[in-house]
Image 1 (cartoon, rainbow, N blue to C red):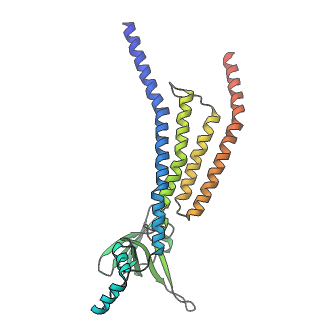
Image 2: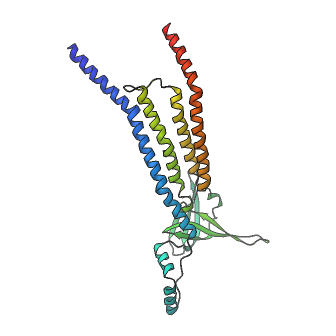
Image 3: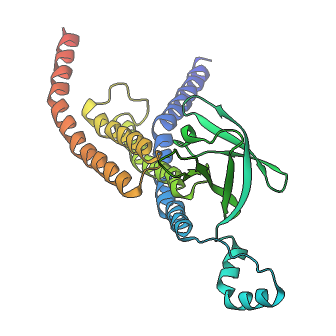
Length: 289
């Protein structure tokens, strides 16, 4: 009876150790590898596609207007086949007049500004403005022009009345479908996962090295400093990229953070190593008494 009970206890202990070992080593290693793959994929495919779309949007021109008379329309169609093809694909800018009906905000951090428009065809449309532009939203009743590109309203043009000495100016507000900032999301996640993935991988390998059969209870501090710095770099670069600033400025700041992390991590590990060993010796001396 006692032998059978000891066998069952040994199996239960082995199963518990395997589950703990999987959760503390294999899981972070697998997640870290997946994070790196997804991060690289975001930087190689969605991010360049968003940048190409932004360049196409900046180079887009207004859609050609249809001529009034039949003969003139036929001549114009034959002379502008390229423009007609561009209009059919949606790569040109098309606008429609509308009037602001109401505006409201949602959320607190960040605040999101919404506008409702009455289009000239009688339909109504709600749009969310791009972050950072809600403070300049037009007042109710303002006549605006909704400019679409590739099937979505990208920006809103409206005139601001001038003073006695200055003429009115045209102001542009971008919607939440702004192609110029569409690169922010894939760039932020790409940088964050690219730096955060190695940190998870490091933690998993560190746990497996120090405790292959049980969770690590006393992993050396110098070994945990480099992945901790990588996590901080991942969070910082992602927070910088999500702001939607110009790519050159974002990559410059991310590069400085990454370089600082690469220099800081080994310095911290070198500084902490002798002090950790001294604390371990003191602990061993206290336990031996």
